[in-house]
Length: 307
Image (cartoon, rainbow, N blue to C red):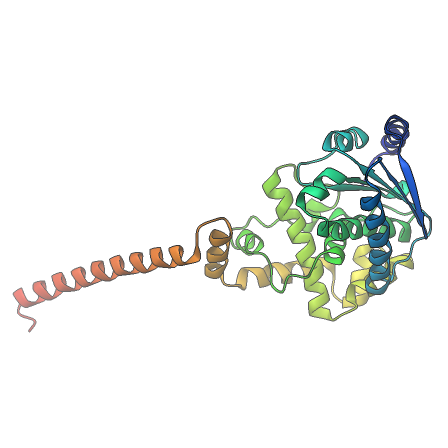
């Protein structure tokens, strides 16, 4: 979630200011960034400062994006404080939010500590990508959400060598969300929003794989020069967005759905060997059924004198 109306952003900043006075936040300054943190979280703040610089270097290399202004990071102590600052515009799986128009990132420190500090790098890089993309196209229409989130996930997380099983099965069952449905918002249900993020990420990854390393960087370069996402994709890939999306969706449909089911079931707690054993058992039952039908046919043929 990266877009808010101007009045909402102003409200966020007022809340940040009020809570900062209430909890006596301290501040660490780094090159192009300041980190506000509550007492007792200096180690966390220094990690954020270091990882911000590391993430910035990576984004400059991979996407050709560099900051235009100083960014601010606010670390919260609790999930309640995070919800207060963000006005409750969060979901249980969100650990941070970027307010791109204000170059501000708010991080739920309690959630990061719960899932592991290793995730801080991914979180910061993701939110920083939103800010840098917004600066790159400043003064123009907001980016399509699927592109904004897809690039942010792709830039901050390891690349998946193949699409996720959920995406493959969604394509095969006709549940794949079209990019036109993901321009302005993502669905509200947990299952569909996960699919929306997965699709956005995997489509961006697909473009980079199909057209070669540096494709997304080149697309963003065209956008920095004034092109829309659609025009930038056309200039770099020489194919319109509709065609790119349809070809990707068709590729998903053509992938093996059997292994996707195996992996999906295994990931959700049922061991793969159990699935295989079940399939072997079903296969054996089918063998017995076919054998029984064949024996009946032979008996009928023998009675009718076909031997």
